[in-house]
Length: 324
Image 1: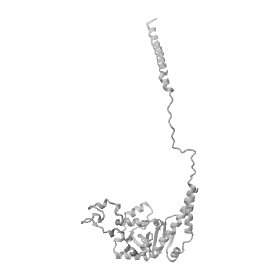
Image 2: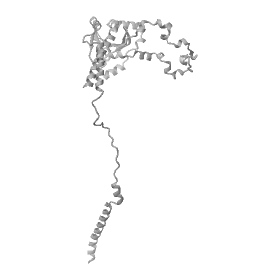
Image 3: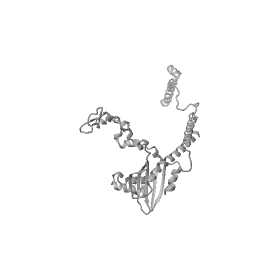
Image 4: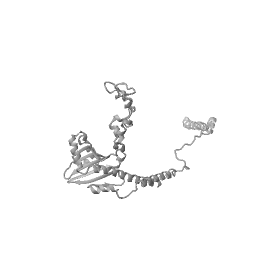
């Protein structure tokens, strides 16, 4: 054989030998060892199944629905027995509207009630809400007069300016320090026998709830508007703020832009800061327009009447939803 033929056959022999060796090597790698067979035969550890889904056998019909519906119906019947609903206004409420120039605007299901009337070329609107029936007058009086709080509510503040010892007052806020309290001064005036007969009948009878009035006065041909924030209580109209707006739309802001412009506008000082004679004249000004004692007595009565009707209707709506 020539050298040329030997050179040609040599690569083919080498490739066959390498291919045969490779196939044997890979076959030995693919063949599992004894350790691998033991490892594969070991069973996998099982874990407890966990699911957030409700079991299929759970009763989802609502076991409390019937009891709740019965309780609502019982409450509804109590309200109906105490105050029989009627489409007509009670006589004392209707009589006031018939004898005055006020027009009533009351939409069932809404909290706000509006009264409107004309006075010359003026348009007057008074708005109030049934939410005032839940007004907490006692809490408001405590917030206005911190002295009404119990001395034990804030022991830390009482130590300022000197040590606070038992049987002393003034909490160390004076130069002379604390002042000793006599035994009779530790008893509230209402609990002292010598003052028990001095209580007025009005105080013992209690005061009615306050109803906040938003009064808006506009004039034909005039862009500006007056708005008063007042409180009707026990037959009195107490003005708290008198605003002036250069644009009538600001007095009854219905958009965010109008409300923002309203807040940015200077509307006047607190009513109590005005001259006393000026306060009296403003009170007379609004009284001439029908915002007087008769209105102050009528508004709380109507708030109580409307709240009663809305509450019964609310009970009906809740019961219908539960029963549906």
